[in-house]
Image 1 (tube, one colour):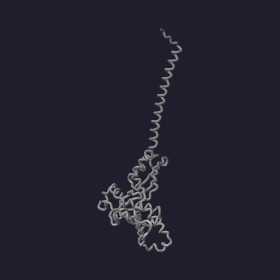
Image 2: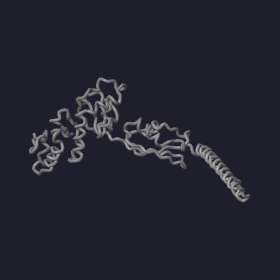
Image 3: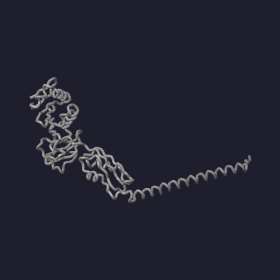
Image 4: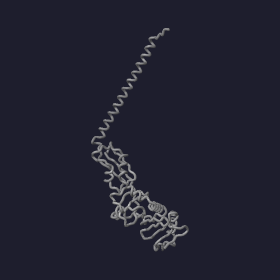
Length: 284
């Protein structure tokens, strides 16, 4: 059998092969050109942003009232006048600050490329109490409302403005007095403050802030080592006694007692208010 290929079919098939080859070459050329452009653009961008025009010129820090700006800047590990601002990674800087400064709860870092500025906004934990076995202790743990340890201080530091008005919480856990303050680890004190008396005391503080907020600023100390007889001492010497099984109920009873017109003129003479038991408040 003979196969006859007409000239026009041969030319058509040949043209198709040439056309495909041309397209392939064009695609290859386009890819090389695109890659080259991207590579060149990246090189130009890096060279441009690493020029002296884009060197970090300054850092603005907002939201800090406890931690010094110099400490935040040091923990960020950045160099003004040296680092290229485009090379600074905000998330890395945020992690550095949070990992080194326990008072920092949240941090946000932004770059102002045109002005060569780094903007750091922080939210600080607010210290609410100091914890120790007694006020005669040598070392105290400072905590926030969630029981997070912010720092360890010595007895000599208690009179400083940041600490002198904090609530004192009595603890019966393992003492930290015998430890050298330079050798105390965060895990040691985290374990120390995570005790039942401390957690109960923080629960009492939260409930007081919610139910009778006018009393909150008057709290001097809380002793919850006996859960059946939690003692809240106020700055005027008055002792409030409540029990673990009716913290909220006891505080509600006291709030009604405080606004009772019959009590208004005589409550200052009381030494204690006992709201541990349902249906009655005892005073003396």
